[in-house]
Amino acid sequence: MTLWFVFALMTAAAIFAVLLPLGLRGQLQKDGGEAAVYKDQLIEIDRDVAAGLIGPAEAEAARVEISRRLLAAADHQRAPPIASSVSLRRSAAIIALVGLPIVAVALYLPIGSPRLGDFPLAQRAAAPGVNQSLDNLVAQVEAHLEKNPTDGRGWNVLAPVLERLGRYDDAVRAYRNSITYNGDNPERRADLGEAMVGAAGGVVTSEAKAEFEHAIALNPDEVKASYFLGIAAEQDGRAAEAASIWRAMLTKAPAAAWRPLVQAALARVGGSSAPALSDDTMAAAKDMSEADRGAMIRSMVERLAGRLKQNGDDVEGWLRLVRAYMVMGDRDKAKSALTDARQAVANDAERLRQLNEGLKNLGLDG
Image (tube, rainbow, N blue to C red; front, side):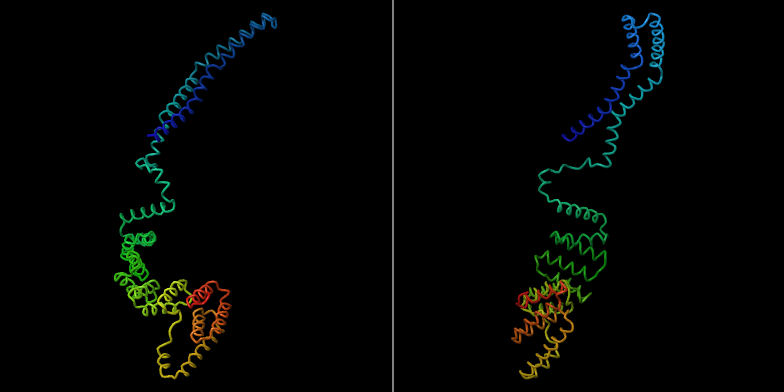
């Protein structure tokens, strides 16, 4: 009610501002017209005659001329143009009194929100601006999808936002609908599995694991699915299997942005970021003496060192070399290799970061 009262006062003020000049103009025309001027001139002539400024003959002639003009002005004041002016002012007043409110209401009803409820100031102050906007956008998309449930693009956009907001159950439903209406692919299956993990509080359930396995079946190199399958193995107590999965991921992508995450997971289960020897090499080493086996390992290490001198961009190779020297008990060579590795990738910020992360996992100062 208070708001409407303020609007009414503002409307009255606007109407008053329009009518006041019209009324003043009419008053000025009434009081300050030609007839009033000529009457003042007649009075002025009488004063001049009394003061002896003009003679009786000149005064009489002036009175006749001014009287003629006064009569003409009186006739003109009663003429239709003045009536038309008065009618125009009346029309303007009617428009101001009636037309302005009607036009305002006509514009407000389609454009404004007359049925919008009040939102208390305390709640507005307590609600964060950015989150409130995001919640409103999500609500709008959800309302749209209720009316258009087959809009695959809408589900594809909504699902990751719901997951980011922590609404994992809703995100699972959105990912399922995205797969239904957009088609199946490994990325959507992996995203669905991740949402299920979130809904289970970080536990890779059998249902989530099935989604990751489905993603791997569609694409054996699907990164997210591979990582969570390693998490599933770790949670089941199969640390060696988890390490094998993550080690294979590192081998396939020596310069990926997700390497630090996988390396940290590998270190958590007691693995190493360096892949194991091939099956053929391991079989050959079993039949060797201790000395021959040591010589073979040193030979492999030297070949690796020689290759890295030719191509120093192989971060994984540098990490294998440093670890090999540490296993052999030659920490001086390990430190020397570490220095060479940093010099080799010094101009590549991303490779340098990956190198330092790997060195930390090896227990060295990154």
